[in-house]
Image (cartoon, rainbow, N blue to C red; front, side, top):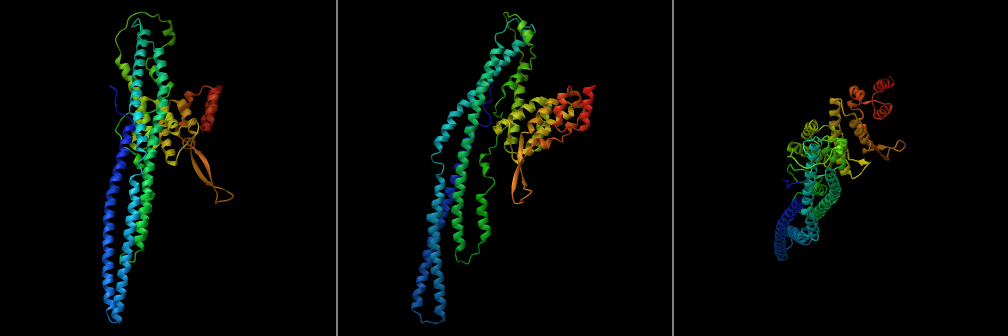
Amino acid sequence: MLNSKFEPDIVQITEQLSKRLNEKKKSIQEFLNILEQRAEIEDVYSKSLEKIGNELSIIVENTQQDSFTDIMQYVRNYLLISSEQSKELYQQLKNNVVLELQNTISLDQGWINEVNKIQSKHSREVRRNIEELHALQDDYNQALYEEKFYLEGKITSKKRNHEKSETNLKQFILYYNQYLDTYFQDIAYIQDIFLNIEIDRRKLVQDAGMKLFMYEISLIRNLQYDISGITQKIEQYKSNSKQSELLIIQTNDRPLLSKLNVENYILSLKQQYNLDENQRKKKQLADGLNGSDQKKVDFIQANSLDYLKYNKMFEQALRFSEINDDIIKQLINLIQKTKAQQYYDALISTIQKISNQKNDYSVTPLGYQTCLKLSDILLDYCNNLNTNAQIVINLLKFSKNIYKMLSVQDQENVEIQEYIKFSLFEGLKNHKVLQNKNLWNDYVRSKEQIDELIGLNCDESLLQQLNTKINC
């Protein structure tokens, strides 16, 4: 039965983001209530000081002038000045701080209809497309199964035309990939809406808080304010590096939606049956149909799930530039099961999807380290088994198009900073797989293959040995 859960789920994302913003609005409203109470206290305090100051003025006027009346005048002036300051603080709170914070509550008005419209468009369509993909895959699996048994002579006719099933599946995968482009773009758009609301809200809160505390700091009172500490905390709130956590949603272990490579996807299904095209063409059609081979179908479905597992782990690592020991361990275990080709296909496909490019992949320094670790896992596997030389070559060639930017000083003017591309290949070119004599000795059969290795930083002595082998 089709699992109704998948990642990323646009409905879940929208609901969680809406919930978080609503919780923030509630907290701000509660904070506003407290500030309004604080403003009322300041208003009462100001009026009380003014009343006491006026009473002291009457006493001063009715008392003979001497040093004592001078002291009373100083106290009266202090009380009246404090009253004016409290009145100003009340007005700051009431007319500026509270008003600006109230504006933050209504920031998301006008966006809710657009978000709901996007969510409604995808809530049913994404599930409908997943169900259609599974149905076409099941039909194709059954057609391949029938073709296999038909060619082996175990059945005399077929109900399905596996070529037609393959065409239907290919066509739908193309549509499915186009749909996922729109799906991911709309998710990113919704996330941008909520993130921009949060950033605007932070800015308003910061401005309001700065006005309040800077005025408090300026008051002449017997209170000691740590000016640098208060302003520093407000500035830290503005530049909080964790503002993107709004978009991080804790997910369960669900299959991750990802685009499929049509040829690789079809090939992975076909290879399970070892179909002989010449044998198929010679075979005569007849009537009849026998049973099913559920184990073969289960194996193909498991193979597809492994591909999805790769995509999920690669996308998590590359999008957030984060790969820990647990993910590395899972990938090492998975590559032992699926072998190198599926790991390579999934890695390249994920990098292309995330960067949305075909031949030029710029990554952050953290993203560069993540790509390096993911590539090392594949190269270590090939090196340990002395196999998959072509995959090693393909990966190293592809790595030349992945790069991070490095800043260097201009030799003539040290104040000028220049930037150069530092490719992933530079980080992989010293991997021990390139010096693996057994692997390359089994692979090389021609001069062209040796020329291919020259650009990959293979050891000179190894290249000479391979040249000797070819020339013999």
